[in-house]
Length: 110
Length: 115
Image (tube, rainbow over all chains, first blue to last red; front, side):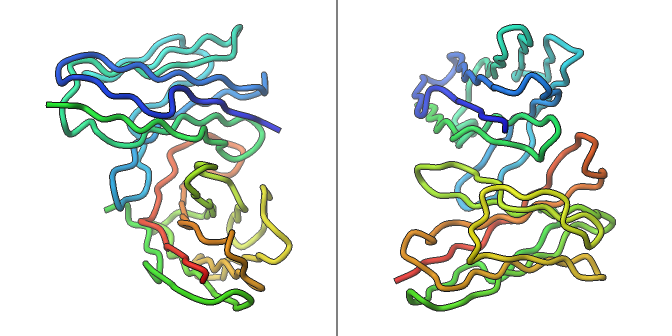
């Protein structure tokens, strides 16, 4: 089955700096790669996703890149703000329901 | 508010006991998913139902079972509880059929503590 590895597990950045979270997946049949943000006491919420026919997607300060050949995808957050502090999960889906990485705890220091 | 409702929010019980977690999906969503979140394992997929039928199974223990009822709400039953079952259990729903991609809408979770 699919296996998703996510790095780093924790990340601290100064407000205004960029943050990058990287994930790799194992199943070449996977074709959908979402990113979820989980704030304290809440359930995960989709922030951006990318499909396998697209290499990059951007939504304001958030961007995701996908390299299908290397089986890795990344989340980029620019101009980080304190409200970006949360746990971020990458996920992959092919023929099975979403498989999540173990999460990255992002702390944005004001 | 995702529109997915989970009850109870918190549950404390003893080893060997049985509990039932309940989930009401968003209006119109036919797929319901259960995930277990523990500190060291992240979000682990347990099981998925689509319109009342089991569609996919993940790392769900034999002590655990689930079902989706005609009104589309779902219940996750955990029996013979062990300390290691302490975790946050999430329900999610989606509008798409299982074969398609699409956003999962998560509830706020049920925190189970086994003492």
